[in-house]
Length: 485
Image 1: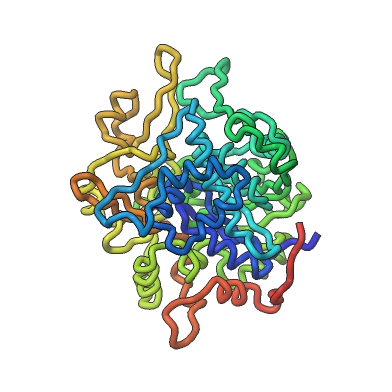
Image 2: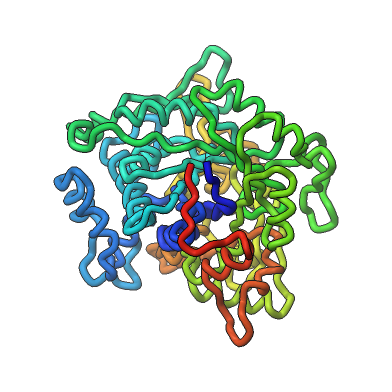
């Protein structure tokens, strides 16, 4: 098995889009699309007129044209919507989603993976978050319909995913146990997905699906061992992510202390024992702070199959980040002014979340204070058990009075940001409110952003995904080399 040395990080919302994944995959490495919030992105691309025709071309390859037509009828706006027209958004997930929501979620993931894989034989993965549970099954099924090669999942302990992949490859009905605040040991709350109910006749149309490899994203040997023991299907490898990586980080092990900037302090307990990882016997890739050739070689020398890199790709030409934000961040890097804050409060999940400081984004507390709190996408809502035994939904970034009324602690709402809307804005799909307010972006990045200038050639102010791959792998890189899995 000729494993790739480099996995491109799966950065949401739509930063790791199909263009970036395709660029990396055609270079012989693992290109990864983000499935987080992709239904909203899919709808927005159609409302913006799909001027390139890429989305509609992918849709034309979906096995059920009548379902595709309903998507086009609902969202497609020839020529694009006006700049003052709000985006239509799919309804918010609950434990009993309407069929139409599962359809749009699956098809959105299908489109993203189809476009990433189109025209080459490279390896394409999809990244999902265990913290965003309710769209997961539909997302996986849609990605598998497009032939996704790898599933990567972090932000939790994804013990159910491997078994679900096994069943979905045969179009079998599946269910997913969801985390519910206040649930007892006797409770078993699940979301269900039956491919034949969502897409009647799909199994006969497409036949058995390829079962993708499954790489959980972990932060400790203990978690790797737990997944091996408790996983409901086979785990094929791991990505070991350290606290310098962008996006959500695992909390420090043990007592959480903060530094003078208010960031969680990580220590020796958070360092993964790679000798013990090697004893597990599965390939692993190291992530978080591996954005230069020396670190790549160090990872290989330690027994890793390679590295996962996100931040370097987030600022490259092919990433889905809004171009003006990319340009301004690169200028900060070149001026040695780039700064990252690991915030213990900004994410509604309660996980530490890295934020790049940039004027005109939600890293500016003044802009944060101006925003009316609203939860209309709901990807990061948590489920909680009411006193009568029914399920409720709440998010610590929603209006404070609503959150408290639902039994949430008021202190949990302090400095929480609506990552669903803010990250969608970062990808260029900012929602426009009825009062004219336009959602501001928030940018997440790893600590490695300060070194992004190493990819920029003299006389240039930008760089490509190929520049990153060639620089990081050096002599390990061979044009046209296709690893196997």
